[in-house]
Image 1 (cartoon, one colour):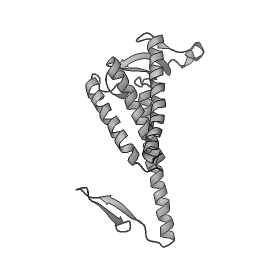
Image 2 (cartoon, one colour):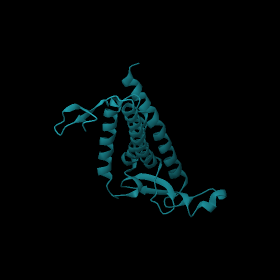
Image 3 (cartoon, rainbow, N blue to C red):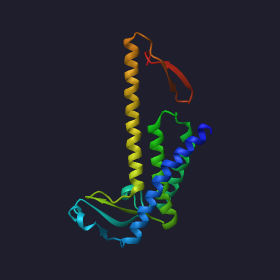
Image 4 (cartoon, helix red, strand yellow):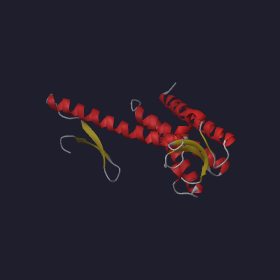
Length: 193
């Protein structure tokens, strides 16, 4: 099996699991809680000022921002999904944090897109304190961004450590690729920049 097929299978696996969880939890809320009502099991009622399950709808972006932008966010979701599917196989195989982040972001965009296409609005149900109500798809997007930032930080730390080791050994730093304003790529010695 070629690498591109493997990449797409990993993407489908990660995003598919999150999409299924997102749609299942939204269905449970719609079937079992009246719109506008909230629920907590009796043994967790003490949590109600801090966290609860509510049945709510959102026609805007994640966490209830930009209400009544359903058409804009539907179009944006298609663009994000298309970009992720296109760029995913171009990510280096060892860059697992970027691949995981893209899978989570794809799942979040697709989970909410399904709601927008079927119902014209997104089902939200997780309410924590005074924070806007959200769902599994919103959480997936947020966790994807956190994983992406963490991956960039880890990569920077590894690059700095490798550069320090080369400098300590008296070896020249390897050239790094740069891209000019007109899109031309060139290699620059790290000591020159």
